[in-house]
Amino acid sequence: MSNEVKKKKLGRLLVLKPRDEVTSSQSGTKITPFHPGRYCRIPLSVLTDHEVSLLGRCAYGMLSVTVFGGNLSRTGIRRISTALGVRQSAVKEALRELEVAGHIKCSESKRGFASRYELLSPVFRSKGRLVSLRSA
Figure 1 (spheres, one colour):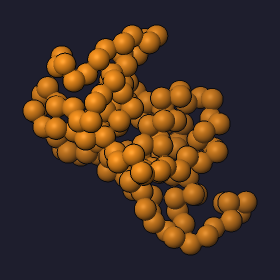
Figure 2 (cartoon, rainbow, N blue to C red; figure 1 turned 120 degrees about the horizontal axis):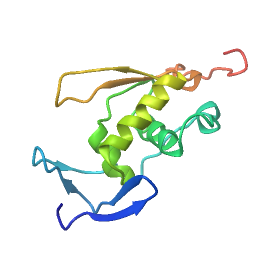
Figure 3 (cartoon, one colour; figure 1 turned 60 degrees about the vertical axis):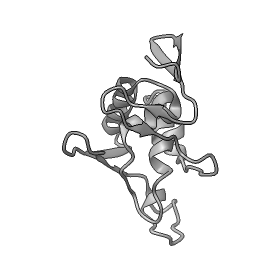
């Protein structure tokens, strides 16, 4: 493991504390976390779902960062794990939790490419129009 990443054990998760960018050990590419000026939208139905872990709820927020006017996200697992400071396997598990709970739908892609994640909340179905969530 490189000097850029500090390890810290927290429960069963290995928490990684990244600096500005982290170099992937497998491909050698540099992964930059999201710009700090960005924001995410997490619907209350996801935020208050106690069947999903806290990491799962944070991963949902990271998926929603790249969704504008639609409901599809192509954020990769490496980028989410770098931004949240956790292992890639923990992010994969969190995304499986979200899929089982019915908050996202995952479309697998070829190895090395980011999967497509469809956010199933009515918040992301609006495509720029205001929608009453009471009727949804």
